[in-house]
Length: 138
Image 1: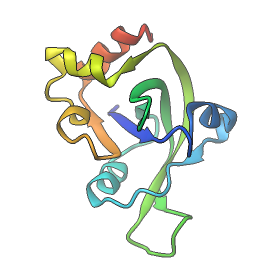
Image 2: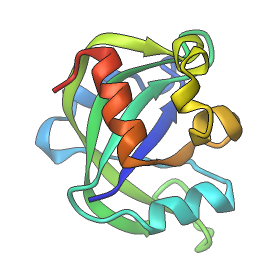
Image 3: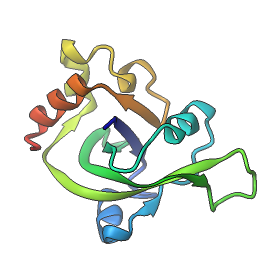
Image 4: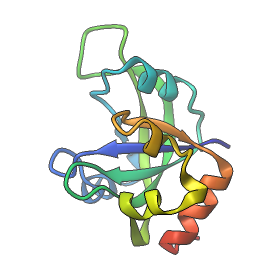
């Protein structure tokens, strides 16, 4: 299993929106960056991701599961763009802020810190466990 972090502006698509989709999940659409798209192409069924509220909140608020592998993004006719489908697994008992992540030396290499503008990034096993611990997620 691999781990990921997926960013969304809560005013566009929030954790509550994701939860409301239930087990059907929802496309993680609208990504128009090749590196982020390639990260989605690498995702497999059952991989887990942090759901990150970007812009004003800047915090991890929950965990999602990949429920459909990369396929054409329904929001465009341009065949270059693909997306995955994700479903909510569970909320973080205590959201973990970007400031907390940056303050943790063991997370200095986290792609969220190094490539802050990229909307879909990988997370290592060690980073995953540490952030879950910080947020009280089991």
